[in-house]
Length: 328
Image 1: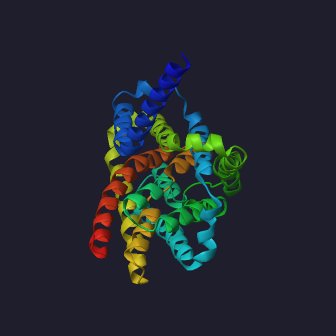
Image 2: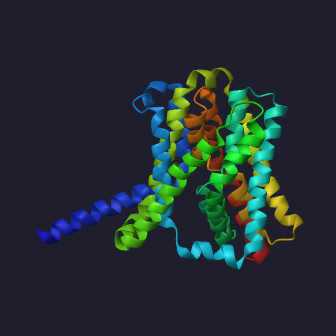
């Protein structure tokens, strides 16, 4: 009896593990499918309100906290030059590019604020996965994500005020508090939970990437469904701007590394880290602080879809280049 019960539990665990691996592997495709369904059948996501965007992002950040290790902070002190180069590239290239693209394409205030928010946010956690697939400098990628996330409560509001303040009212203090609430506190809670309950966290580790993927897909579905009519009538412009924004980040991030004579592994890590943003945070901030501009949430949602596609493509390109360079 006990033996059959153990076998049943084991089979269920194995099946769940396979499902989670499948979700993680095909995250980009899943997000695209969710966005397509939300766009063509908006009512499919009307069961969940836009007010859930912030709590869902908080869960993603809690998951990030569960994966953090003290070793992740070691690179900040052992390789400060690399971290400084990457962080400067992160918070200079993406905000400035967002500002320039908004003006070049004559975006409305609500779309411009959405694009600028994406540019001013820290690096996204998916960048670490893409850097791993690219055979890049994973320690540098994790270090950059950690540092940019820690700096976000200060730099994201200030940069948003700098680049969008002439268009709309920016509550920098309110944004600071929101980022602390939705990003920093959940990460700290996740980190503390891991220290207090290491065994339980270890058992959860294999499911965390899939869990985060589902949360991001839900956020995308909520935003796209809420703005489906406007997206269908004029969404190609914002898709084009988002694609250019991401491509500029990826290419200029790599170029910065090359200009400073860094090896390919570091260049690819900086490229992916700069190009892939925490676009979920951008949508959350737009929902809370720019509610009078409903379309401001859209660039973040579109970016969430696109950067997973472009990230997977450049990861393959960088991996091939790394293999050629090492003679493998």
